[in-house]
Length: 432
Image 1 (tube, one colour):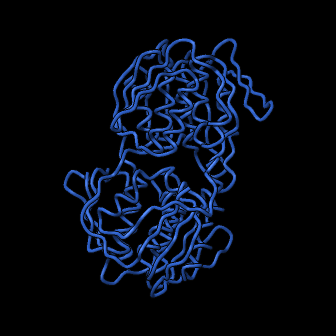
Image 2 (cartoon, one colour):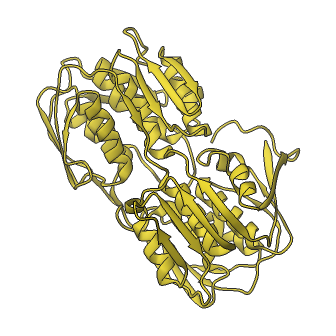
Image 3 (cartoon, rainbow, N blue to C red):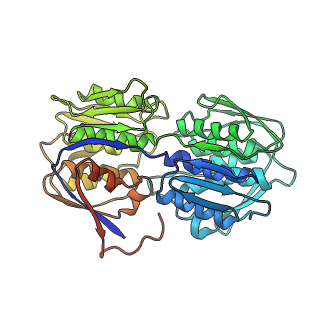
């Protein structure tokens, strides 16, 4: 296991290219199981989550080739309907195999998944959705055992959960419905760009999906899907993380390969807090610089197009050194504040109150040994370390590697003083 050593206080400058979206790639890779033709997917980020997904597909019997960010997947007849616990336990997003496996084989055995521990993220909605299409579901030996002997049949399904629509649940239901008999209508569907990207990929394969990006998605089942080529959308959370870095400690940086529409909520907040944000005419790049008189702000996370839960930790790091009082409330994952205790070790002034962080900005943070607890918390610690005085050691770096492609190399390219070294105090990561 590695740790990241960050020498703080060095202003970032220059430009950085954003990788393909991790959260879009995972269901798209899983959807390759829906056809026995080859599919080719470009801009797949080289992060541990996508690597685990490709390992699972190989274990199921698919042929996987990867070169320079492009993945070719061939899923011939005879692929397995049972996934391995050893792989699935490492990644919560492996649940998105449920939809394509059921659509392709009308049965699957899928171990209950693992992943970041950031609060209760149940699979109940995924189960309810596949049951609505006619499947029978039971839990046996820690596995979901799902069967639809007579095939899946279209239905109207409401995907709203206690904390809003579920993205992976919407993905799973779309993938299951594309080969089901009849028409499926998803009510309270997630509107995230990653859902739209999956729908676009499926339509290229010959699916008939309408309304992706709205609260109602209609899927008309087809008999067969075929191969296609597809390029994954830019990772809006990686882009947002670098935008926060630009506002936190830089001479101004340019972030390339972005989609302006996907970043509206964050861009508006940064401008409201006094920072400079300028998109190119076509919206594919953005320049961000710290404001001369920054001020605190208020965040309430909500489903897209609201402020993303995956960016609240990074903004908490920025607010930690922003004058005034800032408030961060997470309505999606109210327990997702484990980064706050580590930021406080660096001198941040943060008080917690029932899923809300109240941050009083301080003049400076100081380097300290800190421990990453999940993917986005680790990004927040890196940002804080860049602005802190002295040296910060960030342990459990495997959390960062789940979703940020070559983060340390990209920071080095911007002038940061960071280095990755082996961490003798930590055993090798077994499950993430």
